[in-house]
Structure formats: structure tokens, C-alpha cells
Image 1: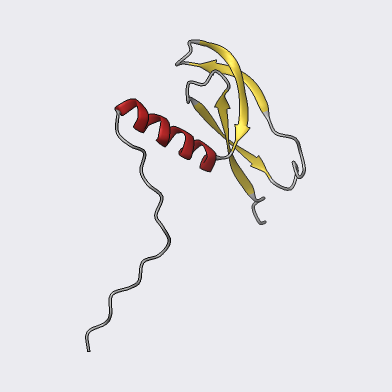
Image 2 (image 1 turned 90 degrees about the vertical axis):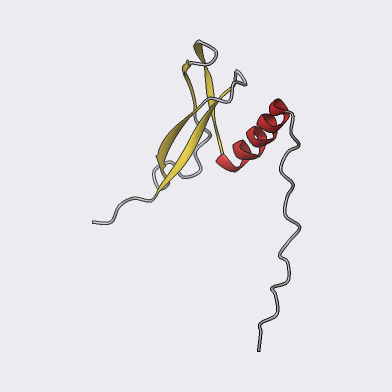
Length: 90
């Protein structure tokens, strides 16, 4: 039997600590379902807080910039498209 397609989701703390849990959802069963939110323990805040489902790409952008600002260094710049490949030697 084939396995059901599953999607990895991230439950992010609403306390703003940056802590998150990972979760796998069955795409077929939960098709068009609303976003998941659970009350779980946040070890950074040291209490139970609401965790909401978000995508990882949003998290990466947010926390890479936040970490760079905390360290006092500028955030990494986005690449400006593909650069031309060097000419091949004949």
C-alpha cells in the first residue's frame, strides 16, 4: 500500500520566544482544514502558551534577521538573481 502524503508543519509560540514544535499532518484527511493551534509548554517562557501553525520559510526569514540584529551584525543580503557563468576555455 502507498503511504499517505504528509506535510510537515511548525507550531510557533505566540509568546514571541522563537520556540517551535514540528508536526506532520495527513494532506488527504485534513484538506482545506483550518490552521492548527494548541496550548503547549514553552521552555523559554517557562509556561504554557498558545502555539499556532506557520510555514518554515516565514520562520527562517524572521529569526535569521532577529538573530543578526541581536548579534549586532547586518542581516544577510538576498542574492540579486543568477550571475553569468564564466566563459568556457577552448
